[in-house]
Amino acid sequence: MAYKNACEILPPSLVKQIQQYIDGDIIYIPARGEKRIAWGCRNGTREMYTRRNNQIVQQYKTGIPVSDIADMFGLSEDSIRKILKK
Image (cartoon, rainbow, N blue to C red):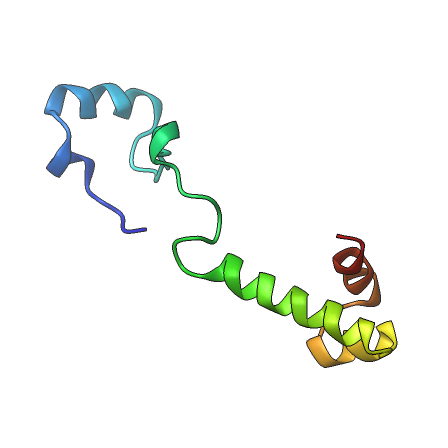
């Protein structure tokens, strides 16, 4: 997500109104509901975690102990158990 200068895209009167609430700080304006993209879909993070979690489940199914899986993936045993519950 790139930052944009409000003065370059909004009418001056609207910029002045916004400055009454927030002057010089950075704000986030979310996309309209129909344009929203789910977390991690834009940059591939969601897919990466899904693949990792699937690998964790496969390792567990082959009989590898939770403690060893935690070491392999750099996660806590509790995190591994949460992934396995899903």
